[in-house]
Length: 132
Image 1 (cartoon, rainbow, N blue to C red):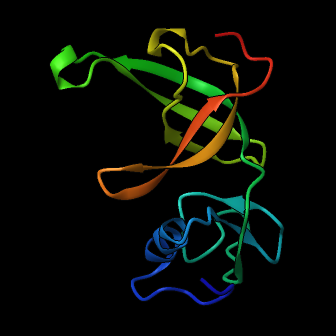
Image 2 (image 1 turned 180 degrees about the vertical axis):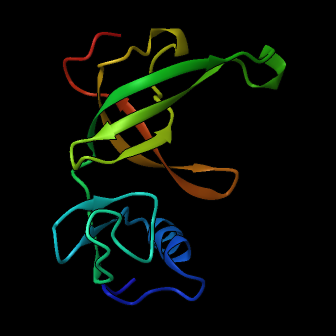
């Protein structure tokens, strides 16, 4: 997807179009350089409307986590967490590659794209050096 070409349907549609193209982007305000997530039409810091789509570092820290309990035949337990990205925004996702009960607040994580129910989503894995 070319830069600076919003998808029909607004910022959310643009965000998901990038994901489907295998390219994770978040917004950054051209006026004050604040990173923004969830996608918006104007900057919550300065009310600027010139928002660029940039690739985040993919590095973050678990802010909070919980375990969703399911029967094994329904896929088993999984975690839901809030991750603070190094860019200063927070997003909801999950940490994979470890037991859901082992995900801990303050754990460093690294993002990757994964398929879920036919859609591309951002998930996280423990970063190198994180205890499993």
